[in-house]
Length: 228
Image 1 (cartoon, rainbow, N blue to C red):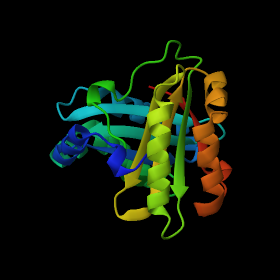
Image 2: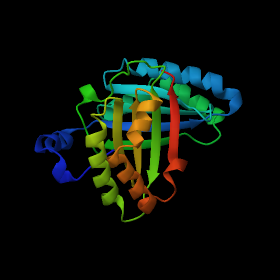
Image 3: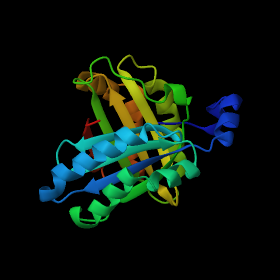
């Protein structure tokens, strides 16, 4: 997902500088016996959060290979909106259950877009939600290689987003973790993702991964199913 700063239009740079909005990726590893009740509370949290004035989007995903793992992917207008959200009873219910229902404490990553687009176009719906393919990738980049990673992902984002099968393609830096980056992708189908993998800008990206990532990218892929 991204590019060099010089490749970003000046208007986009100005818009990025004025933004206070941010994203979050929250990971929950549930104990099997608490999975159903946790999912129920997370569903309610998402449904109610979407009604909050400061929420831009919020979605719940379940890991395909581990049904006990959930991800909340959220966008907020500003920090004050998130602070207000944490005071809601449905959010407190999730936090309280988490004290006993999780194998490890929930992991919260605060994210900033590296290739921002208008919030209106941030996440469109696929033609068929049953066929859509979603994934998160959490990258750990070697020290000193961050700029190469960002430049190449900028180029990749510019070319990936116009692909006919691309629904969403967003790369983020992680606050207070300068070597960590988070990618979210949504494709109309697995076939469209496979076509994407064959594009020259994607093969260039994967070649770079072999040089600059702390571990093979395959170990960082999280294919997920949208719950709500």
